[in-house]
Image (cartoon, rainbow, N blue to C red):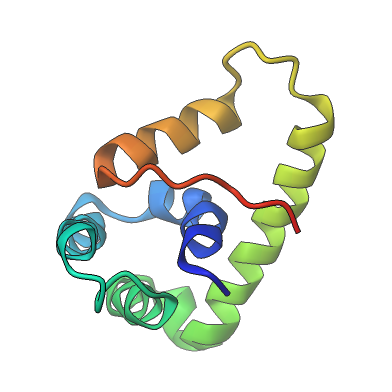
Length: 112
């Protein structure tokens, strides 16, 4: 999965992370903006896994399964949003804008 798509797909997960854990994502983004070695899905995935240690359900389910489940759930929400968003600021649009602003990375979702 491309890093931009992973960032986009993890919007809900990022919003649900405790602030201390989201700081790890912000640090990754700060490094990734200036170093191409960090701006890849492997690096981001492992940073997300580090954050998931604070979520007991993620530990019990397994990080890969937990992350994949969240990505699939958000994909369904985003598919509905893409067809039904009227262009007015909705919750999905606002969430994505907040995450983009906090990370300082202007990613755009690529059509598949």
